Every structure is written in structure tokens, then in C-alpha cells.
Image (cartoon, rainbow, N blue to C red; front, side):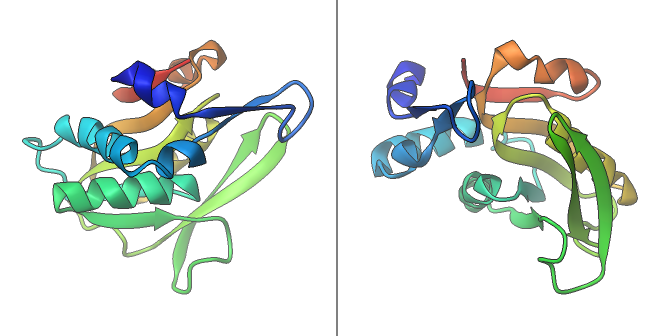
Length: 172
């Protein structure tokens, strides 16, 4: 099944910069049967684990996270770039390999004791999801797992997240 999903992901060389091979998941998302298979495979891990909320990371994490939340009967929480959320927020600034960035979440997005999974489309160096984990420290919630559609294992993102449970469906 994983090889069939991999076959649906397009490589785009030199995007967003020279030397990077971008894993374009839009070709997988366009195939309804394969997209369903991917979401069903991710959801199978959590069906009996009682997940209250899925935390989706902007922007492709919203797609995977929303579908996963629907499948699990859970709510979805959006973690966004600064200035995109209309209410009071918690903010986390973090360093990227090519600069810095920040993420925000509504300050009342996650109730105390909620069981959450953090979802994104791709795990690379782990910097973004590490920032989301730190951002969620504002809440007294339980992070069940960090889950990804794709993981670029050669970038060692898991090492950065060593104290967190991590799952990825497809590895390169």
C-alpha cells in the first residue's frame, strides 16, 4: 500500500530552491481512492485511542488534519502563521534552516486534559513541529502523537523530537 501511495507523490527538483527535491502531495490528494487510503491508514492508529482534537499545521497539515479529524470524530485546531487568526493567540517564534518564523494558535483552542495529535503533511528537520509542541505547552493537554503523511528520514527530524512519539505513513 505504501508503494502505491509513494507512486502518487510527485518530485519537483530545485523547489523552493536549488538542490531541494520537493515532495508534492497534491497529486496524491487529487486521487480520491488513494487519499482515502492514506487517511484511513493514519486514522487506524487512533480509532481506539480517544483523540479529542487534531492539531493541523498550516497549510497542508490542515488538509490531512481535517480529514483525519472527521474520520476520528474529533475537532480540528488550526496552528497558523502570524496575523491569520482573528482572536487572542499564543505565539511561538522558531528558527528555520534559512531564517526564522512564528506560529500562533487561539489562546482558548484546547481545553485542559484534551488528548491531541499534531498532524502535518511532511516531517523534514522537525523545526516546525517542535515549535508547535512548545506552543501547546500553554495548554494542559496530552499530546498523544505527532503524525505525518510523509517523512524525509535523511533529514533526521525524529532526533529533534526524540522525547515525543512520532508516526509517519510514508518514508523517503
